[in-house]
Image (cartoon, rainbow, N blue to C red; front, side, top):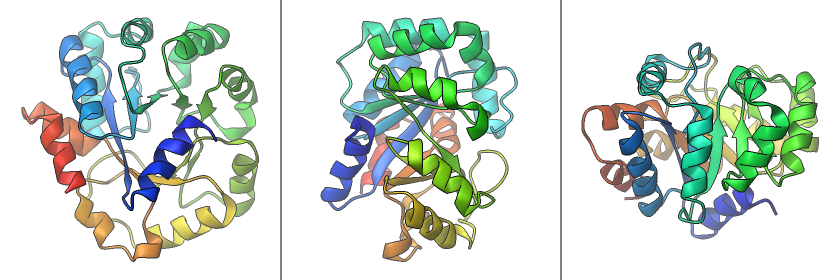
Length: 256
């Protein structure tokens, strides 16, 4: 079993939803970012998604995009993320996933990326702008170093396309609650239970739900059988941090 899958399965065995916070590397400052990752880890994050800042984040809403702008102004780069993770290797209990766009990864070089990420303790990648038909090379090079390429599926993903992902994927499957960009929403779309049902019919991996989550009450409103195995939150956490809130307080809300 891949370590990312195990992290979520372990949470399920404890009778709870696994927690997957997303934070942009270098936000709100480089030093603060690494403290935030450590605090999230100590506060019970099962997996931590680290956003690689990019100047054209097409899948990101205004909060995540704004964090990327600040991180880039702070001088954060993919190389610096790797260096920081390598310095801290073995210090985090949570699984680690890098989430970013293909442009920085291609500039880094896929072989170099996989080697350095593996040495730095990364367990997987999410690449929103990498379609399945073009993902073979990256999936192979990551797998050679024990890392998963996490699939993204949404309301517009057909069953046959899901089956293609299911045949080659590890870790977990990331179900996107809505079409469009990331960001907080007052409630989950009514189509979410049907989406999660379709995903579970195809995948044997645990299912993480993201895009739009801002509070645990949104999940509590779903029928028990319709709830995801893991919750991914990004904009709400980044806004909380930007307003001076602590990661520990945010995580406490989700664990209560």
